[in-house]
Length: 436
Ligand code: PMP
Image (cartoon, rainbow, N blue to C red):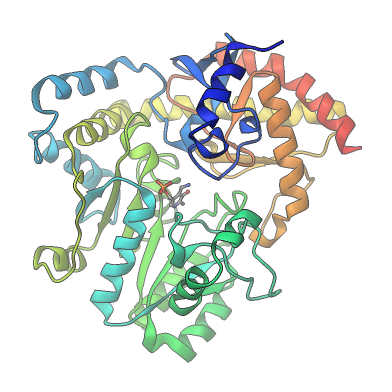
């Protein structure tokens, strides 16, 4: 039967490559879903099918769909100050970020994570007068040429996060940019970083990492690792950048840096910082480094930086997340953990190997028996199983994000947990048949 959505997809595909707006494929976008309604944690596609939305726009959606307080704040902004360049909401938004994020002595806004990461690197180069940066296998910092893909320092093979499609696009100049600007190391390996600093520290401006490697499968930092990197960066005058574009405001209000008690020099924020309805990213960090921007020694530009709708969204989101001792986030995490438990218990019942790992606000499931302790454990084979389960879950009414990430929001309730519990067993049973 030809459905309304199939026809719509044909129409869209005439002009939109693949019918999707990005190349990080979600399995259910083989036949892209187009939605006509979204409320709280549920979305309804053009054919009238309802889903629990743990995809949440790649993790940005933390306030839930149709959140009244959020929408009111945006509507008020549209009515009053939509198109000005600096509005009367800046102070509140900035103060909230400063209050919550330990490294946020000063703050600048941008639009995307990709762009703000580049700004952080530029600032680090200017501050240190050095050129190259260190990045790690399995970590993702946006789709700029100098930071994607590469070869494993250990195996010489493309790293797991190096999707074949991206490699095709990173030949030639882009590959040169990557290799001439950065060193790619295994993460959680302090001796190797120390050795690199010993050899090349005089030309290394920055170390950039996800402090919990969510993009590499939800791998936690080894005990003491972040502290050791902090100490090495101080010793070799290297700027430490935490990319908290996922963990920021999902791993508590102060992000991973607060939980692990390690303050980076610069932090990149994005996604959930503005709730999920509009794009905002932020570069935050040490006042002395950020002041290079004030002296105009380092350019930071962007037509829509600090646009009122974005600033309003940051203010509304952070007010809601922080209220009553972070009650909304506690509730979000509680509901997420209930769903994680259900997933694990039901997998045991059907005999499918499955674990859930990573912080509750941005956890991943994996079709294996032991949590990943190294991003290299996240093999193409394991990813393939995870993606298969992702598509099975979608067929049964639960959308999860890239590979196997489950992003909760603050409007989740027990009805959503029940929905999850009702749909997961069939998805797992079908998955088990394929797995065997
Ligand atoms: N850093 C991290 C850790 C991310 O997960 C992402 C996006 N998935 C980015 C940077 C890039 O952000 P954006 O997609 O907004 O450019």
